Amino acid sequence: MLCSNCHQQNEETAQSCCRCGGPLSEPRTSDHAPDPLETHPAEAALLYAGFWRRLAALILDMLIVTIAVFLVGALIGLIAGDSLWLLIVYISYAPLIFLLDGILVWLYFALMESSGKQATLGKIAIEIKVVDLNGNRVSFGRATGRYFAKLVSGLTFSMGYVVAAFTKKKQALHDIMASCLVVRNNAGAEQILHLKPGKGMSNSVAVILSAAGGLISAGVMVVTALFFYQIHQSTGDPSGSLAMPGTVNAEYTISAPSSVIGAGESYWVDSNPDPEFTLINARVDIGTMRQVGDEIEVQILWPSAPGDLMSWRATHPDIKIPDGSQSIEREQVVCGPEDMVSFMVESTIVAPDGVRILRRTFNPAEERLKAETSDKSMRAMFRTPGGYSPNPRSLVCWAAARKCEGKDFSWPPPPNNTPLEYSERATRMRAEYNRMFVPTCVLK
Image 1: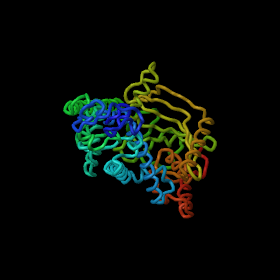
Image 2: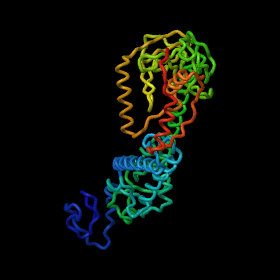
Image 3: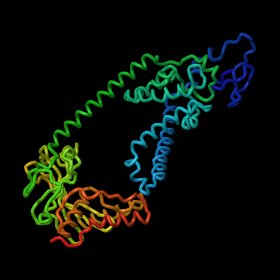
Image 4: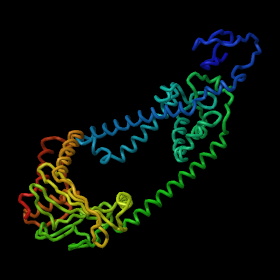
């Protein structure tokens, strides 16, 4: 007999529920008494796991998976011997980690849902489980199919998940595709086999709605792609062809004679020597570099990333900012023996014809304090040793050091072959490499 309070199945002759202790209706003694599940289809339908229970279980599982994926990344970094693992592991080993993460998540769902528990940890906590249409435990193959079918549900603007709130058996699209059910833990195979579906939409309607969601999702992706494409087009040519006042060289340049460094006349060089990568190529004016205390002040022309122009216009609606405008930052760089510290003291938006449209200034002392504090915090958090690399700020130190040595400038610098560890050998190699970037004189 089914308890109307907690929906627990009891013996036909029971007077009270074995689970909650609530009173039951008059016990049936006839040998031909109808099946209570057939008699009470509405109550039987409550054994299906509802949308909110499933959502709660999914949130718990995502938290568990996120922690597990992070630990896998950390483990790979430690095994590889990188003391910088927390910072670089997802860069250095991205393809391997991406593959292992995918396998880990798949096995988590497929193995647990095909196990004796029939549920992931999130489902166990919410007291629901996965079964086939007959109420039996699913095989590993079926659990695998259900997992990858979730990719289809995700491509439907999440409509494949939402339909679980409205279908007769509370099935999501991936449940329908894999012929599975998600039910309460107290639902036995015999009960599920005789369950009458509750009220709701048919599976055919759920599939149609999911397909419609897929069309919406595809439309959103197309519109988004067109939007960013137009933004990119409106930013103009981000290469080195900007005709700024005093520009000596307009073409891509990665070398210069020592005599032009800090000579007082603009001479722009490229931090990325490949013209194909203009969107990540910042140009550095090594001609107007000058010494300010222990800092080297320099102009850096940053390429306009998609959306920059729109952001500038939204922030300054009263100023006309034409297409193709770019940003020049005046920065001060401290070239130390272990690493450099940089901070911005002025930011200027420049039109394609060289006219300076908008200028903002910052307090050098305050900005330096912020930069040094941030640098110390990052090192303490990620246990990272300092070092120079092929980036625009390191280029500033490299150019100043070449000037002091009377050598011509060329970029990029020699590769840094220092192993990513804290051994005595690595520390010595790192110090020798960093020393090449430290100026030994004061720029005039």
